[in-house]
Image (cartoon, helix red, strand yellow):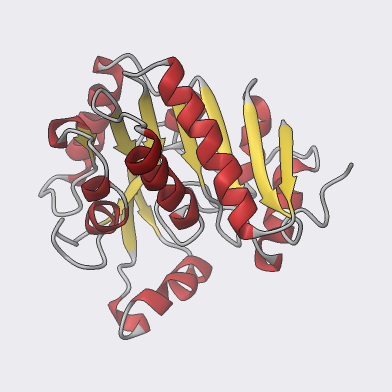
Length: 243
């Protein structure tokens, strides 16, 4: 693991965006794995700026998002597909046919997860996976557990995750209890991985991810098994990282 530690969230976002932009320039038809949530918003804003002001071209890029709530349609304002369209996709020149998502309303979610794995394999795998991390160290929606599936699957969301995501819904009761997510194997098969984290609420998750103990009870720690991972952290999230 390598670390890029910055003083502020804004600096972290720009550093991560610069890394992604260089990867896109080096391989215009790159396959990206993309996260949702509040952490990557700054990175997406900077990528939009680079597209509009410096001509960063997404026309050949293919994307696969990490996860989607089960039961929410793509036009639901709290679905992750809606979030990505509103936050990023509609602001750059990515082709709609190159955007890939797990379908939260699929009648057979297990078959949908298998379809997604096959779609990733068909394009040759993910070149660069971009991750956030939950306060309980979940990556994608891979929650702490004694065992974790390798491939995409339907997951029961942890109470901490439901609580953290309730701020986006009118009532906590409205937060979906299940999601479809890439599995840890899906993530680790990516050729390169970057992870973004900011704020003191993530310091324990980052410590658990980087302290050398690999366990499915701390899903982020499984990233230690990958040969090319870069963590972009602000100083608050990095406070417990060993120098």
